Image 1 (cartoon, rainbow, N blue to C red):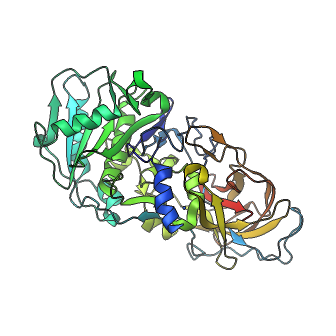
Image 2: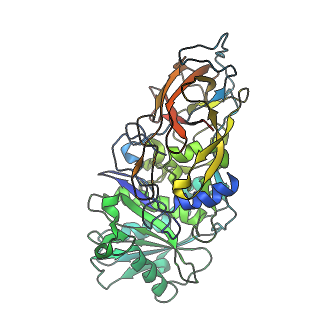
Image 3: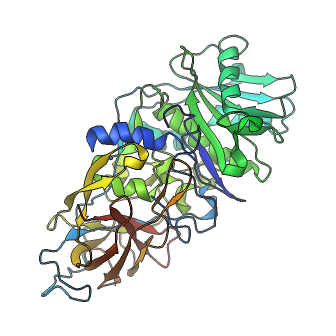
Length: 489
């Protein structure tokens, strides 16, 4: 968003949260355009059902999603095969289909990373928990704020990004005894934090995060007051956000509303998401830190609907939440560049099962492609994908891999072609292109190779076709994904 409320948790009714973010595409145009710059299929990645967050909602940016309702995402592996055939049914002569391997992963893994844009992170976060005395769950929010910082969970999700243990305690518990208004707008809350931080609330340091929990029944509207055209956050699927005040102090804060359909676990999940992102990207409006996938992996932006801070990157997965990570709280797993590039779980703490997926192969490198994001004021953005002329077929290789033995094969299929590719800044769907996509080997194990053949029949208005290869291991909780972009330019 240009002027935005960052760190938004998007809710999928009634139990899941998708993030809504207005800031993403504007940031994309700066971060990725300078470097180089989706849609998620509801049937799989949000398989519990749920509202999709607009790419550019009014004034809120980062949304942490409730992944508890089983949202899954896939990672694909693609490598170009020379000799693109003239028809989609043509097979590749003498195709090398690899062989099972005991080297894990069998291939170097091509995966996105969340970029360090150079802004500060919070080396020693201090959590100030702000509640209202009318909130019957205020004690839970206070103990969560105290316990999360020293936990192994916090270390697992933050240590690779330069964020240390967070601290809190009784002195950092703020209880507001005056009655809250029936509803806050995001601008009201910004002014509210500015008015109290360092006055009747503990003073802010460079490491302070103010975590505000709205009581049940208190509304939250985005983009102004509800009677002035603001959008109801809960109805829009926004379950929380983090940002910084617009005044000269740039106080860092997160907002956790209590939507009527939320349970305690939903708010805990949102808080873990927003506290993590407030620590790893505390100043998203003025000095961005960890935000945005790298230039070569624009396909991941489409896969994640352009929501791409460290919490956002994992909120569409079943494995995003697991109460055993931080008992007794329900918290969200967060993206790990280190684990993903090693060919293991994208989100940590790691799920207690094999990580398995497909990857593009270095022997058949991807093309430089151009994606028309002018509708998002980002112009033509360069990334990596496969160039395929309309009505012409192209075949590329992908390698099956896992981080340990999967004790049997996993299967592949194609997802995402039938869903809108994105939404414009007014929330209108942008249709995907159309193509015939086939995989010649839909079952395999670490070391096997499959060939994907794509025949475009119509390109989207963005000049691309998006899909992902889904990997499914019958014994696993989580599916995994390989996002792919096809372009004619």
